[in-house]
Length: 293
Image (cartoon, rainbow, N blue to C red):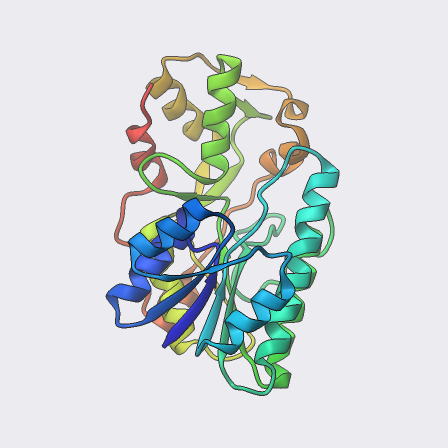
């Protein structure tokens, strides 16, 4: 397939581009800057200049492709307002991509997050949350899946709280950055809450499988580690950075504090069985040993 991808030069996206090219696909990558255009070209993709806010560019990219993978997000968590703006931008972008593909039968694979289900690990059958600071993302992904009724083979690959590669990425990466700034490897609450995780190279394989095989309207979990305790994550970070490991107030984590403090394990049993996906790369706690002080 000739695949149009947004977010193709990020941590996950660069792995997805490499996975697609290694399996015989060609890639058209949305790029916001000269630097990202150069990175896309060096990876073997054709750059298309624009951003998620450029809806006409998104429609044009989708029109040129046999399928679309959407990964881009502002990732600005500095304030509730910035987060809300990022969610609104993504929602409009997904709607534009869906409109461009309507009636074509072509695939649209969008990124989502694993849902939080009190008292147990979430599964692919659980609905996404439409409440809270990132509830708008749940609504836009749900709308994208509903495009199945309009002739789009839309699917969602739900990512865990940490997507990592070489010791960086995801919520664990944010904990590392906060530890460097504060001088303490901190965790909210008692640290017993669990976060699911996956290596970026394993996640990339699942995006390809969903693009190639998944039926319309389906959701999949890119989960390798069902749930690592946040205190264990903080302990490895503290060891690598030679910092004390301590409980810190939830409020110190800002906009994401309550999400950080929530126990949110997730299962990928159905995904592994149905698509034959099997993670092969290091676990989160193993990968965090790559952190450099």
